[in-house]
Length: 114
Image 1 (cartoon, rainbow, N blue to C red):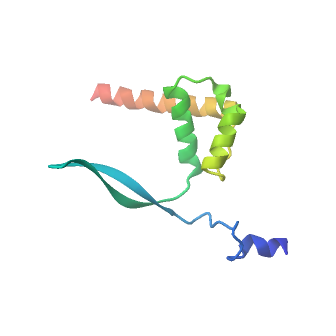
Image 2: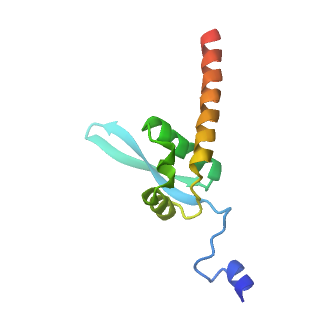
Image 3: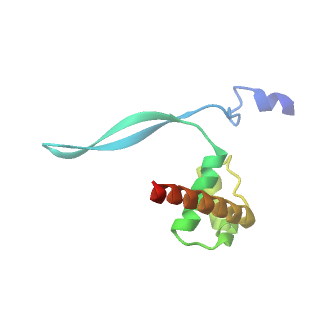
């Protein structure tokens, strides 16, 4: 019974991990009547690595401590926002920040060289 519930399409908790979601992305268009919001539909999928990169950028941009990712509030927020995203440990975030630093340093070197 348990194995059937994991694949049953009628069971509401079954989510296909490959399935994309349609998102309305708003665009600002200026016209004679002022700004009006025009949106475009975009299909996005879940990517764990992109979520980790975004988390690292939050820590860097807002100058947060690495143990910020272990707070209960952030875990609750991320579970509500995207239940499939497991928040990594503070050591993993620290390693990801260092990787991003090295990558951006090399990119800056190439830009200044050329």
